[in-house]
Length: 236
Image 1 (spheres, rainbow, N blue to C red):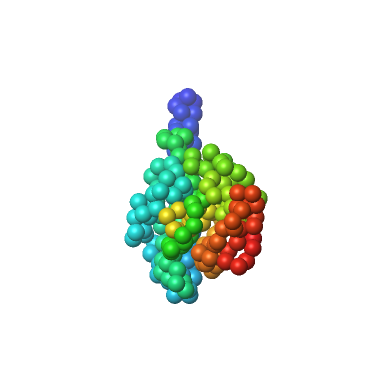
Image 2: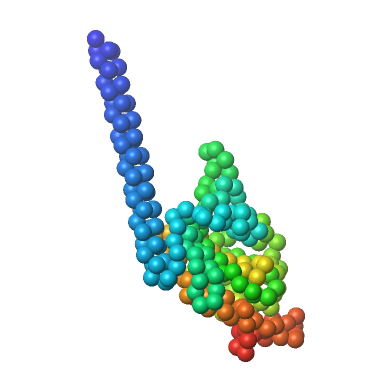
């Protein structure tokens, strides 16, 4: 009888542990869902304040649309959400939350970013600048570097990389990486370890940077003195 009682007690204890664990998981997922809901609400409100449109889903198939950018080409199972889109001044922009996965099964990890893309006629060389703050998740495209400016490792045009570093110091310090490709500018920031993040705060700085890039004119002696290149009449 004592053995039977002990067995029953252990079964009850095990069931209690399982119930507590299940309840904890339900509460955790519920809290996560609420955080995502309120984040979407906040982004939508800020988006409308800028005169832009907002969608919780991805109406553009962003992984396909921007699949040639280093961030989007990283990992597998890419997904965009909380998409803001529209025009500021003469620039067309899209901003969104982005995630992709690395590994499979029990070794699978998820990387989360916020991204801002400015589409326009920026007739400048291509360059990819990956911030050292996100060095552990550097994509393959950014591992064969051509140089280093400030906190960024870069591949591509050295003169333009030097000017971008001087024109985007606040973004550099915040941890942004950036890429210019096909006339478009993509800015992205790892938010995997951030509890709160609002990309709408960086829409205006992104537009300002795009305007300076459009005005970029390399100096004649870029190869010897990259820092002498300029955005329009402003030197870097």
